[in-house]
Length: 285
Image (tube, rainbow, N blue to C red; front, side, top):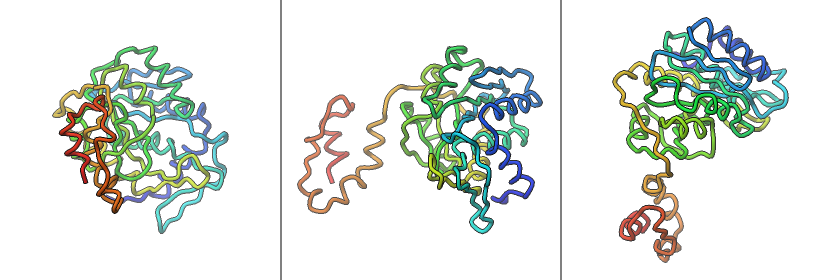
């Protein structure tokens, strides 16, 4: 499958960048009404209730005050950029969800406002819906930079993490997205997946089309086997154990003579959930 867009698809994507948040919110409501029977529409979010037990989430705002006027496409590198800030964080996620719907999938869809201001739309959603409005096995947000990251924030469910990684993603760590608000309230595990942008929150932000399309295809694979997936619970906490298992080599092995003198017990804290023996084993170079 090609990882490039046709000219008409590229023009359609550019149109997503050139709308204000309010214009895009209204446009997405109209679009979802053509695909779903039940669509909730407020000033803070748009939500369509689907028949696949997975929710897809993206936010409608960007950090830029105004939409870009000029968008440039490097055909050779398959990359988009704007000299005034592209806004692929998170217009790429919104666009990706529409492409998934065009393939015939009908997951629950949530578009939020003002994620960049602290998740205002997601907060209002959980006030209106303190529990998930339909049965969900897990939630996917499409709002992560890079090409193959999966981020779980404070959801410490190793089984879910391992499941997501089977689709070709690699666990990384992040600070905040809408699922940081939604998942704890709904008690449903969630993951944020790379959608292809880089250098977000700057005028040098780029969108790598091939990476975006690759994630779109992976999400389609996840939706296609949704009936076979189990329901993954949101488990509050940070997985120190998995973090140290993955990063101990990068953190300590590269410090030369310091690694030979470092005593892991200097940093031991029982609140991490390790026994002293486990801590020693995980952190000794």
